[in-house]
Length: 168
Image (cartoon, rainbow, N blue to C red):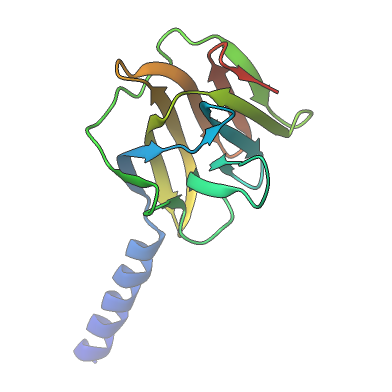
């Protein structure tokens, strides 16, 4: 009888541990291909589908740099061919003006930012059950790592702050 209770208690602990949230914080540096002589990236976000930071060359399929997802398995992703680990950058709005807020009435945004040949991306997310449920992302560019984009998200709200180098 004691062994059955111990096995049941062990199973309960295993399932409880699987449901716990974990915080993931990673910074990567990504090389960007030049489009008309200027490095640039596209940012797509949608409520309910998470958000992604992706390259969109002039032709062909988008090449993802990094992303976080509310509904896809894995929660966070980064491109190992174009991005590598980098020193942590500040995770802050850094004076960037508000660009848009996604909520029930405004559910998607797609913008393009000019940045130069290399960007640093920091993802800080709470991951639960394999999905990113909330977090922040910042993108900085250039030798001085100037702020370009800052995003904060939760299940029903996503706020985007962007420099003047970004537009629809």
